[in-house]
Length: 148
Image 1 (cartoon, rainbow, N blue to C red):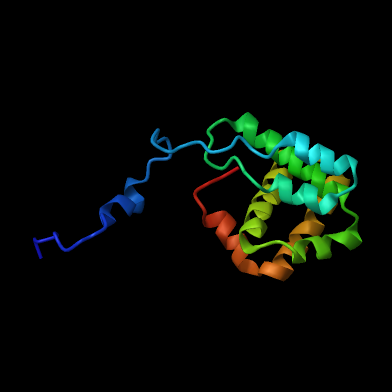
Image 2 (cartoon, helix red, strand yellow):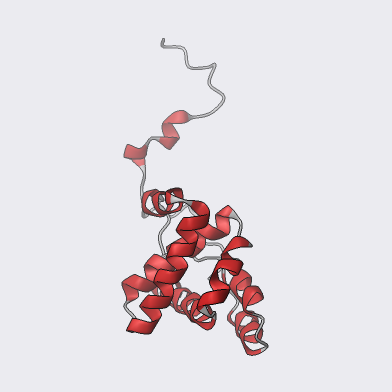
């Protein structure tokens, strides 16, 4: 078993014991959603477009917590703009990846602590996300390494 030349992929690189959260080799894609575009959609009352724009480039790989918090607050603002009756329709139009990202934002917004009305709105979003994507969405958020 000494000959490992048959391997085409270095499986040792994916060992969870060797994961380094502070690894500098990761690239830092976008610094969160485009605030101007989201605000433009919100001001013209195009809430679903605002939601999709807010979910486009989440700052998952950046190390700047202020960027992550600002993006979370922007998404929370978009979520609170929806009426309770509109939430289910908006969630039904989300892809599985968008649902997972939105679930991360919902948990992060709850963590940042908002007023009671904001938490009630976030819980409504959480319930609709779970009803569409199941408990797998929750598991993917908690087991994922990329955090907001």
